[in-house]
Image 1 (cartoon, one colour):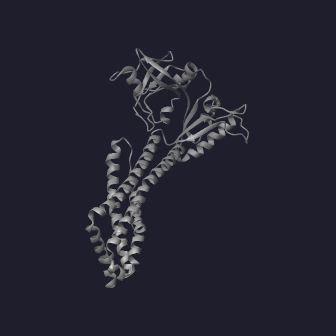
Image 2 (cartoon, one colour):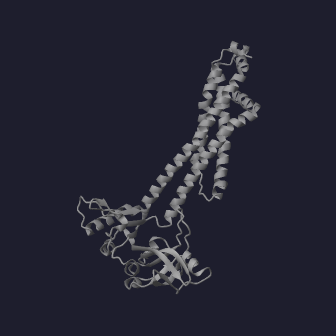
Image 3 (tube, rainbow, N blue to C red):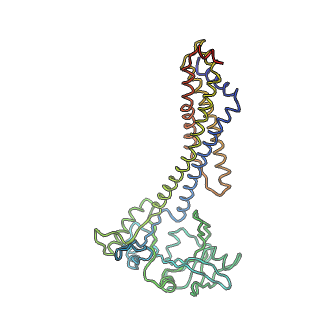
Amino acid sequence: MNILNLFKVSLKAVANNKMRSFLSMLGIIIGVAAVIIMMSIGQGSKESIRAELSTMGTNLLTIRPGADFRGGVRQDPSSMQTLKAADYERIMREKKFVTKVSPEVTASGQVIYGNNNTTTTVYGESTDYLDIKLWTIEEGECFTDEDIKKASKKVVVGKTIVKELFGDNTDPIGKTIRFKSIPMTIVGVLKSKGYNNWGMDQDNVIIAPYTTVMKRIAAQTWYSSIVCSAVTEELSDAAIEELTQMLRDNHKLKDDADDDFTIRSQAEMMETMSSTMDTVTLILVVAAAFSLLVAGIGIMNIMLVSVTERTKEIGLRMAVGATGPVISLQFLIESVLISVTGGLLGILVGIGASSFIVPSFGMPSSVPAWSIYVSFLVCVFIGILFGYIPAQKAANMDPIEAIRHE
């Protein structure tokens, strides 16, 4: 008997038990669909995070104070005062792999206009900050280098600040707001960026000259951080090495001393987030894959029942010349048919759910093409693996005993 005839016989056997075959397929359908949905959510989340981080500049570098030991106790990095004006000045003077630099000082509190108020964060920055973080001025203009020298009380605000303090359809340019009793004049409004993937409102921000925040609000002489942009994303590592050497020299650190600062690149953050999402996705896929294991056991159970029910048929086939391998192959084909058909239906269900249902819940989704191929191959493997024992049972039957079976 050739393969085509075996396939026809197997297809007829599956079709003769439509309900039983469908119930066997159902486990495969659910399992494959679940795996594809989990992978699509993981891939979509990873792409969404990368896109989110890219909006802040793929060549972004952030220098922060490092933790230090004092009296045997590790200090909180945020309380360290290791980044000073001399560091910023040297970077500006000697930079080769860095294009834009902005010292950063932050202060959180309540901003007030008339009877309206809201809680926000004021970022003290240089004029390079908007280019580094890819911000765009939608109305008005940014403060100038001259404003930085004079510690001028001019600010640029996000759309959330405008909405909370002035309401819609109001021009805030030229109006004076108060932050911790310090009057500040709005000279520009930033283009909206909306919420990021972590649920933070990127438009709830005030940007002022860093000298203004240092002298008039925070009353400090050090920087909370220094943000830079490398010449290109590919040169981020070279820029980190350059900045590290400058800061170690400035801080007079010995060769065997640890850095009292940390430098993080956006590419490093992307890699870390991608790795984290890959781990989460793997956990979800493994959990969903258990349903495929259960479905495979279900197929094996159904095939064993089928072998028992068709014992006399098997005996007759052997009596007219069918060999054990031919009988075994027939039942393997039936098992693979059930598994692959269920897998194809599961792929369709998974793609449909990932494309239409998952996005409706506000979750990012992107079906990787390789997940479809892998799902198909897994279904073939399940059909062979869990169909092998029933197939061998059928092949090893004694023809005479099988014919006598009632």
